[in-house]
Length: 272
Image (cartoon, rainbow, N blue to C red; front, side):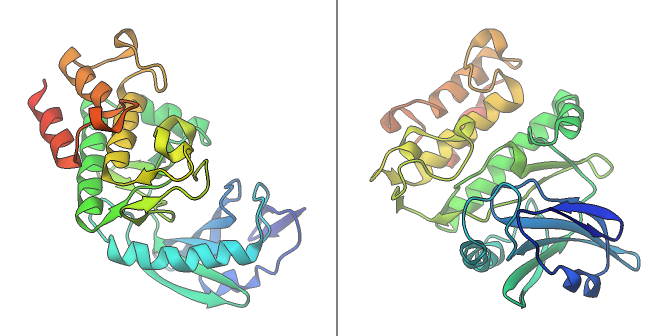
């Protein structure tokens, strides 16, 4: 079904009362294609713009229940507070709304690298190489901080990477599934895009920790500068030295990867 909010369509599996949105401002953007169970909105109030994430509706591509989505979003609010960082989209507050739950962030006028937004992705990948290098270094910086705070990246992928062209600033978003490290894979196939997931994220009972995030960062390097899952030198657009760094990061065997994100970063900076 389709609801119309401030003149914009919002697709849902079943009806849901979204009248509460008017208390936060006028909706100027609807993002209803997530499979996480969340609806996302751009809201304008006076001269300020906000990004609102809402759990509590049966969204178009979500296979779980609204109650499960609400529980996860409540847990995520604590993660955003603990991992607050200049590279992370600024988080304001969260609160219960009826049977649902909302999180409110600053709105960032940025393009997203994610394949779910083909027009934005095309613009993102057309950025100058120096800008893409800045993006990768920001991603590394944030995840070193994540590891220092005792967390592991879960469900990080290209849809989590934004770039504000006016400010020349990269941002990270959508860290809802990050967990305390180490954790154990209790799902078999964990949350995430297979293009960015390590072997242990597909293996029931496997340990998932900082070495796992090293793999994710290597996969991110190939997404930015290479052939994504095609890890060939022919597809790689940087130096052969940096190709070797990325290849070590995505080694199937954990023992062959860099042991820490700090070690990966040092090797990346040393390579030219």
